Image 1 (cartoon, rainbow, N blue to C red):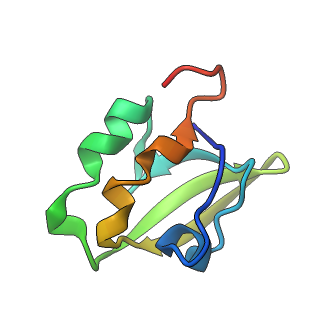
Image 2: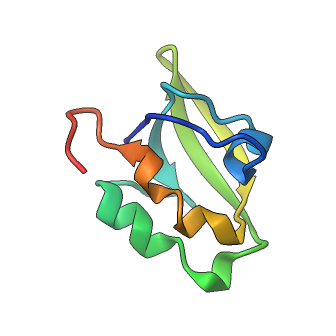
Length: 85
């Protein structure tokens, strides 16, 4: 999933996510689309560190994001690389 934008002062920004990154795994599991990601952003994970695997400039990287309450509201900032939501 292509990260279309990253909100200022968000957990994603704090973790180092950038516009143009492609998220390929969340907590070690492949991401298949926005619905898949949305289903994984649960209240039980708020405040917990979650590893993300991303592609940036063709390089695979792993970063850790601590999910915040707002993350469920900003899922709209993600979209698939083919423009599918």
